Length: 244
Image (cartoon, rainbow, N blue to C red; front, side, top):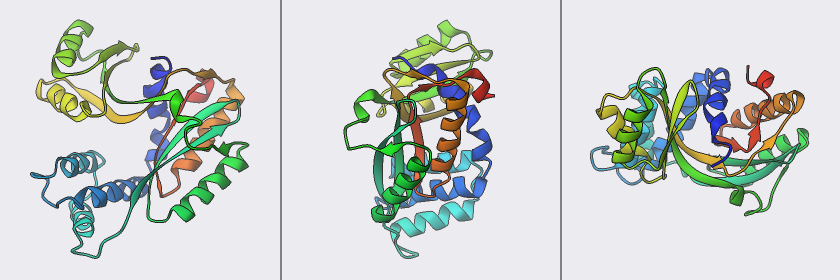
């Protein structure tokens, strides 16, 4: 699957933006609210349990987590968020998938359209972009913590589809359904998992020069600054200078 090799670099590049911890917590809280609608006990609600794990990994305060659960169960008054996926194009023919949790689609779509158009891009019709991506789980492990053969053996045994050597890290590729089980099994086997998520990986990529790479990263930061946006995926091969 082409294009996956820049995932870890993109995640590192986004680190500065993710330092806006309050906004990160707000986005995770929405996921907790949605998950908790199917029950507030993480022992009986695996999706809630996984989302709480994500919240803890982001150092989200316990009382904030509990408040979000109560909102989801209706104890503190329900908030009706729903999942929405938007397809878009950025300059240079870059395809973009935008995953959102929103309580007002009539607000979210125009906001995203305005951001994209200011950057020279546009929202696309449903189906115009999605075929260029495959939704996968991806788990990164620093390559100096385990040898490739050992990781490959464990990952495939636990249900992963593939393991890619990307130099500084290995990338374990899974189906979306198998992602959490594989991640938990690796952690249980004392494998030092660095990061992981279910995301859209591009089937093919387009190469950008330094200027367009920098402009794309600025656009992604602006999109992710929107409270409704959970994740932004693209199919660009970024110039090395832009990733630094």
